[in-house]
Amino acid sequence: MVRNERRDPFDRLRAARALVDLGDARGTAEISSFAALPAHEVPWAAATAVGRLTALVARLGSASWPSRILSVVDTKMTKSAGEHWVCSVLASAGWGAALTRDGLERTDILAVRADGTRRMIEVQVKAASPMPQPNWRCGTKTQLPSLSDREWFVFVALDPMPGQAPASYVVPRDHVWAAAWMEHQAWLTEPGVPPGKRNTGFDQARVYASTWEGYRNAWDLLEQPTSQCPVRLPQAWRAWVDDPRVGLPPGHPWGDVLPDWQAVEGS
Image (tube, rainbow, N blue to C red):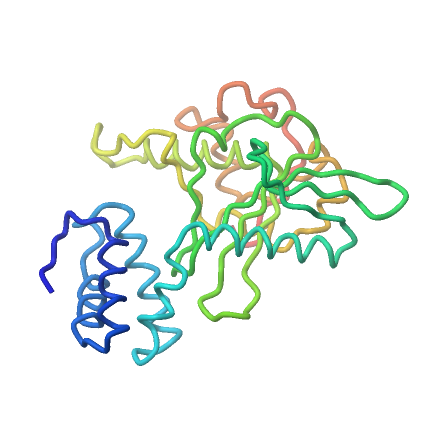
């Protein structure tokens, strides 16, 4: 197989999959060589794919991993898996949940509490394929203020093994706005990094699962308005609030009143 590093990495994976399905060993060799590429030598998307490959190889073993990897490459399937997982958890917790299929902005799931309160919530789901360090793009559309006290994000990190429960992080929208902005700003202005070395815009901001650890499986938070939820970001983020190098995003409500901060233990 002739390798072309400029090709879309997922095109390369699909082409390799076709060879694997035909029993051609070149398919497995291509995937293996792709996974071995240094991340800094390929575009971000390819580096992410390398992470997915590495994680799945470790979990599934060399005999079966080529076909299993490519089953989660499709981003639409990943998103669908995340949305249906969230719906199933909400239903088991007493919420009547429904997917929005008409392009409703900012909302993938509408849910109403199946009790006397009839409380309603709006949920946006972000799902990540299996990888060693799950992360999600939280661009400028994510970094928008809440329009109500019932807007939530659920970040889902799919497990490499089908049938295994994914990791889920339940986060109020304003917390996501603050975390995404601060994490990216801290990265852009990290001491010791030469000026101009990092210039990726906020539309490409990414947040890692470690940032959301305090919100892991925090489904109970949905029982209260987002404005009353304590902040569960790592302690470093609390220090960034007062750091002139980072601070809060302009116009963020925490600039007026900072909520109760319950930092992740050990962070």
